[in-house]
Image (cartoon, rainbow, N blue to C red; front, side, top):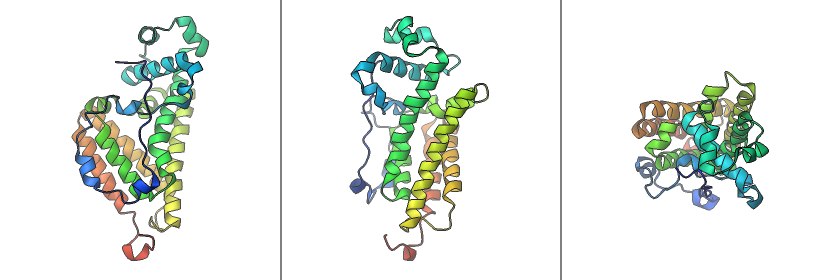
Amino acid sequence: MDYKAIPTGMPVLSSRQRKLMPDHESTLEAPADKRQKKPFWRLWECPLCRRPSEETRAELLNAAFEEIHRFGFQAASISRILKHTGVTKGALYHYFPSKKALGYAVLDEIIREQMLAFWIKPLEDGNPIDVLIHIIREAGRQMTLDDIRLGCPLANLSQEMSPVDEGFRERVETLYTEWRHGIAAALRKGQASQQVRADIDPDATAVMLVASLEGCLATAKNAQTRELLLQCGRSLIQILDSFRPPKGDNNNG
C-alpha cells in the first residue's frame, strides 16, 4: 500500500456535461473501473496537501487516513504510520501534538474534502436530481470490493468514536450537517426552477438521503459484496426519480 502517494482530484462534470446525463443504467451496472489505480476513498486531495512546504505533513495525513480507515482510530498504530512515511516521531509531533490531534486533522482536512468534492460541489449547478443520480451511479462504478469492505470513512469514525470522544462526535456531526445542508440547498434550488417537486421537504429529504446512502454502504461493507451496494443504489435512484415534477408541470424540462 503506497501511503506516500497524494491522490489527484477526481474529474467533476461541468454543467454542460451534466445537462443530459445520458445512459444512467449502464454506468451503475458496470464493474468497478479496473484502470483506476487509487482506492475510491483516495480520489480526492486535501487543499493543504498540495503545498510543497507541507509535504511532510501531507505524508503523515495521508498515511494516518489509510491507517485509520483500515484499522479504526483506536487500533491505528503511530509506529506503522511512521514506518510507511519514513518520518521521525519528533517530526510527527511537531505537526500533530497527539494521536487525537492527528485523527481530528484527518476528519477536518481529508474526509471533509472527500465529501465536498464528491457530494456537495457537483450539486452547485445542474438539475439536482440528475446530479444525485449521476453521483450514486459513479460511486457504484468506481468502488472496488476492497473499497466496500473498508466502508465509508466518515461513518466508520461516527460509529467508533462518537460515543467515546466529544471532539470526534462534534466534527463528524459538522460534516454530516454540511452534507445534509448541501443536498437540501440543491433541492430548494431545483424546486425554484421546477426541476424538483414542490411538495417535498428539502431538509427532511436530505436527512433521508444521507442516512440511506450511509446505510447502503454499511450494509454492503458487512456483506462484503458489490451487488448489495448496487441493488441499494438502484432503489435510491427510483426514489430520486419520484421527486421529479410531472412533465406537464416542468416548464424547464
